[in-house]
Length: 295
Image (cartoon, rainbow, N blue to C red; front, side, top):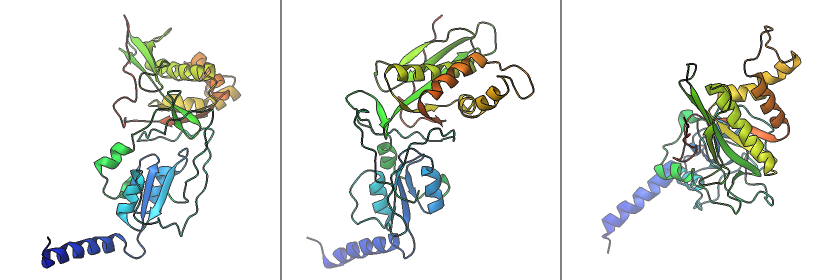
């Protein structure tokens, strides 16, 4: 049984904490699905985390604990403050070559019958002034559930990861390999040596080509493709347009070194709806395959 002084102390502490969290005019912006899930203290920070992110999920709260509960996918103790924003339904952009620092995995579901997520808010994030993150929130942001077809979905788009590497790049005897990752133990996962000229850039390009070819074979129309190759993303979303206008030559008139690879990737890219995402660090340990380079 609590003594009155102890009980008073507990009540006083809880009231003070609640009061501090709900300071008049101060809000916490929670990002459940975005470039970098977490809780942010300003709308501009939040916006930078969800702007152009396919099917982003975010809300504004008056209390920090409720904001973190939303990030973790838990029920909040109070209704979120949405006086300055209204819910909206985001649409998947055709292509977005913006670079990402974080790789959230979308919820897995069957892609033939998918309802688009509708819980979105006018406000979103930026890593500069994040409220103190928790380890649990970070772990929850990487969690995903398996669908019957084994794919990971972001809205109605299938998520895939590609990578290419080359041992001894640019030197005699170089050996390159490509990797395509659709999910843990997925039958479409690829880890194989690169055919033809052995370079790192070709490996990155051919890995992306392989993923798009597989998507076509599986009748997948929309993809969110993660790659750490800015060269590949910039090439397929920007440079190719100018090269084609210049009869597949550089602005200087010089030849395009990986012309055949880019022609192949460009053709595949035009036949699908692809969101190209650049990544630097993995959130979970099994995001990408470790390549098997055969002698």
